[in-house]
Amino acid sequence: MNLRKRLFTVCSLLCVSAALLVAAPNAERLFRDVEAMDLQGQSLEAIRSAYDKLDDGIARDALQARKDMFEAKGKGDLASYREAYSRLEKLGTFRMKGEQSNLLLGRILAEAEPKRGEYASWLYQKSNFYNPVLTLDFTSEGATYRYSYRQQIQKAPLSEVILPDYTQLRTNSSQVGLLKGWGLAKDELTYRGGETIKMPYTDQSLYAIWEPGVRFVQEGGDTLYEGVEQGQEVAVPTPSTPDGSAVFVGWYDRGTNTLLKEEKTYTVVGKGALFEPLWKSINIAEVAPLFYPAGALSKHTQLGVGFLLENRGSVDLTGLEARLTSESPFVTMLVDRLSLGSVAANRFATNNSRFSTTRAMQIQGGYNTFRFVIADAAPSGAEIPFVLTVTDKQGDAWSKRVTFKVE
Image (cartoon, rainbow, N blue to C red; front, side, top):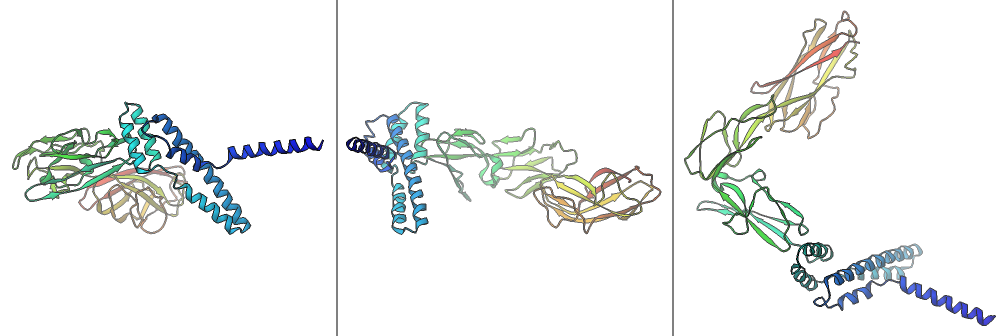
């Protein structure tokens, strides 16, 4: 009976030991196996599988090391904590080396698609040494100028890259001309500006292709004059906008600070120009009474009204003033004019906000608000019409009609 028990105990210990061996940390063993692989002779699939298993082993060992560190810290066992930390630190060395990465890249690029892309994406995730870079070279130079700028893009191979076009540049077009597109060689157009391409497998450079030209940017289609020459005259188009409240200021070239207001033609200076339309446009987004509901205004009470403006134009508006009027015989205006200062392009402001903001803000009470009184004689439920008009420094105006009800 004792012998049987001893045999059972020995077998149990052997089974437990075997289980522990299977579950034991094995990143170092897996790393040695990977290091011993013939990267030239083994299939790429076998190599990928081995590195994936190594990563799994590293993750398991790291989890165990952190757990051991936590337990050692709780017990105050400094020696055990240091030992676990040393194991965790060592796991960071079990990574693909530069020469291994380069060797695998060479093999991957010899593959046909789609396997080439599949393996390259895998290598990008596994190797710290595989980081293809796409360099965009904007350089342009002449007898009296040199424009030099480079942009580097680092992304996974085959991911999408949208090449810059004229809308993203602020250059002196009279010197460099207009950006036509991008070339693998400095004088050969390969891609158009704005075109979407795939990130290359290896480091590549694209060169900006500039050409003489004048472009008028507008919704519905640009007007482009290509191959222009110094002194040549081109017709200035009439701009269009779907916003009926917009006021056209002029065609503006930021590179040369040139503004065309009422000109019908433009005489080319240097290699050309890039004109964008400047618009003034105010959206009176909201007009609301303060504290009282718009559908139940009290009679015989001093009431306040505030509003929210949105500058939808492309220029800052300055010297703004607002006026609130009503044709109702029941309304007596106490404060009907307000000075607003300025509102930057593409920003919001209220009648009493200190600064314009990129997001709409809430209308609040306080200073610089319209004030009026509704007479006791006003019928309950009567609709009181108002007109809010905002005028800028040049006298251009925008209006909004609103109606409030009497309590």
